[in-house]
Length: 309
Image 1 (cartoon, rainbow, N blue to C red):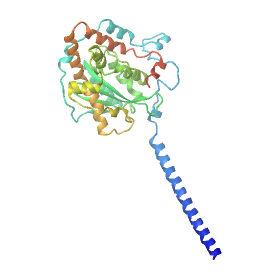
Image 2 (spheres, rainbow, N blue to C red):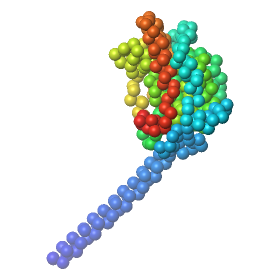
Image 3 (spheres, one colour):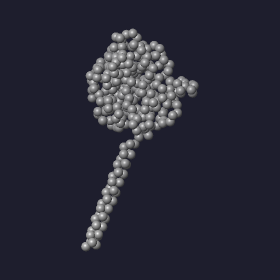
Image 4 (cartoon, one colour):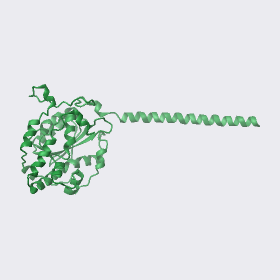
């Protein structure tokens, strides 16, 4: 009787061991499939970039060297310093460019720019404008220094979303219009944007109006874009999208709408703030443009960029 009990117990133990081994084997196979899928999803888009202006080292950042530059040391200087200084010394504003700016709701229409011909067409459009709004979306969660994943540009007529992952090596196409001192660019909180555009594409912003700086000069209770969107335009946005993964393609509709709203309403916000600056008087309008122009210099040393990440 005791012998049979031992055999039965041994059989139960053997069965339990076999079941456990099978379960462990299945779990390992399942985990292996998950790991494989994860690695495939996490393929880095920046690996396809042929031109990397700022790597992960601590070497000094080299500015763009213009074609008419002969001194090799000029790579340490801002290539558009003279143009920016001229605006700093004489911050003249053509108020007429704001007269046609009105508050418009976002339509379903926008232009997604992902090819070089499309980018060239956009450059031609912007070169004929006197003012346009700009915003950027960064990805830095799975990148040491981060990179610009999207640039939003809005005119009074149209919203443009530039896929800077697909066009990373061709962004010099729009460099002339960004550095054109006769075209005003409207940003909100441009300190980081200016650095990122220089770092990733050698894009330099000349002639800038920063709505965040205008808020500071006007002593607004808040200077966030969300505050201005609500008070000037009656628009409420979900700023949590700022922390989303902007590398993904295609972008979900809600992220596209968020990205467009940041630039679309910026021109009207700029007009509202400009009117208020003019009514206040006492030279604060010139002060606002002075503060904005100073941002255009960005950073001359690459290690300063690291503080922003």
